[in-house]
Length: 224
Image (cartoon, rainbow, N blue to C red; front, side, top):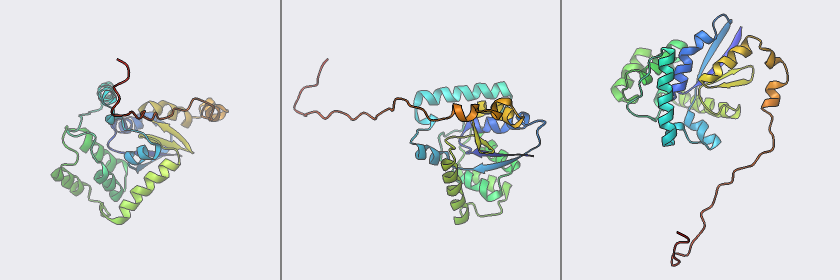
């Protein structure tokens, strides 16, 4: 049986699309999926990145693309009233419940169906009552576990979500699912040196952050 870890944060529409697509991708393969919540913001901070929604042209493209993809795949998707939002309460709730597929689907549907505010207090209370967590989502144990999940994922090279992990290999995003399927099915490329060779470090130009030139405030602007 193939063991797959699905690293996710419900803030990601691509994670929702990949979650819904996964059963079709894994059809015919004996498998078990472990759903592991983490915080995308923690990964972004670890690697010094901005989220797609923090760069306005990228945000616009991302939501156009995910709505098109949702229509192509027949997956319901409505942009939440507030996005990006803080997914902390929902990720903790996932852990407190024991994140099986039923729980994770309920969390994703809460965010990505209906277009409401994912953090609206009455909605969060109703979702918590529906899922009946075995542990306190606001308890120290759950908080520490979510931090640990995020830190361990970053150390393992998880840089975004959704990220699927199998036997130490990481497959990123909705468009990484066919590659995961090929690996699980014993694709010849994965038996040779291709995986390691393609991902090996190599020389390249390193981008340096430019430092603004200091200017005497009494001097006129330079150039037209």
